[in-house]
Length: 325
Length: 282
Image (cartoon, rainbow over all chains, first blue to last red; front, side, top):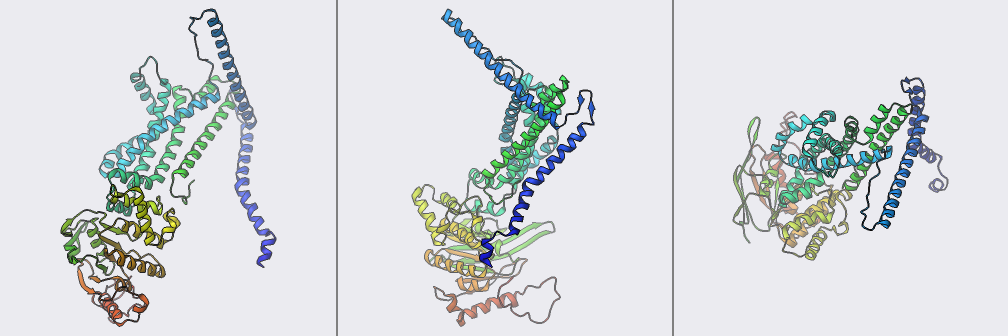
């Protein structure tokens, strides 16, 4: 019986493979198709002052257009720099003492430029938030006293919307950040600081919980070994709270991304949020389709950011058995 | 031999609870000689672990204290290494790294890097774990984890080895293996050992003296039984030995007659409870 089973592929086995494949690929595909169908059917019934609500085909077209516009802008920029170089070369040939003038190309930022700006802003804000939140989390996780002192503040500021922070941040940045040759534009600082203020909390809270829940046995081992405070944190507390820290970081990053779009939209800072707002103000018949492209791009980027964090977590986590999702 | 190597000096322990003060230990006093193997036995909740934690320095006695080599000790330290009940290895470190952490603390500046490496490997060989240096705790069995826990403690070259039910969570066969290993190691190194156990056979087989504790609250030392069996001891030969069985009987008698734990739930039976066949106290 056994040899038979090895030689002939069991029909039951084939079925399980088919079922697994269906679950892995088929079910999500069905979900997406059903969504596209409903979208298409729904969109054709909605008429706005900017024309009919865009269906999947219009959005697909617009994403193509956005890409073409991006290519055109790039070509224009390249041509501009080439002309500038040629002009400077010619003037230098005439007069060796001539100091060449270099000007940056000032074309309109394209959709893809805006994505880049948004990503840089969100990552800077997030990294800054992490650099502040993790140490605070460790300290208040270790000390019951400090936790009692700081916890009310955390609970108070955690639910604050970015829109509430933004005016304050803008005013403070304008007042404090005065420089003739600024390293980064003010608008960048505004969005970045707003993002940081909003996404710092989950990391603080989760790190503190992770640190406070180091097992008593591990604490005891550390005491018997007489590990110094720094070694204790490095060798016992941090590794043991890594899973909770990452839970916090992933929450923080998704909040950061959501907050950033809102902040850019409201404050007219460059980025995807501004793209959406500009298209809305522009009000052409293509606008809604282009906004929809942005919506999908925002979702996709948020998803990829979270997957990236998950990869990092897998890399750093010692518990390879843990189910991460 | 120094018969006053370790003194548990009139130790009492009270805890503050919402219902008022709870007296866990009352005047526990004993002197332990260098190289002696002591087991603490008693019913659950009688404060055995509290005694061990006080010796380890993890708890502070309310009255009395611990004197090691004439010096009072009140803080934990590697000279009183602890083997915890559930191994307490760091899951993010390999077998080797778990042992290394303690070795680095104790021998910093005293051993070179190569010497440390050799010493760590030597200790893991002693518990027969040299094949799993780079495994993490979740990749090895419960018995192996406990072996690594023992290696970690031994590698600190402790004067006193404190073991809190080290084999409690293991199956009977693994436990027997580890008991044999432990006897071997003790014969070789001659550390002073205090071990908590629930297992009467384990206590008789391993100990020089068995300390039997009365039931709490306000538990204290009930009787001390000296085990005068020649070493090395062989579990198979001893199973027929009348002296061995006599010791076993004394411990069982203490636990099930003199200190019989009255279950709160069951109706109080007047007849004598028969001895459980496994001779193990829950």
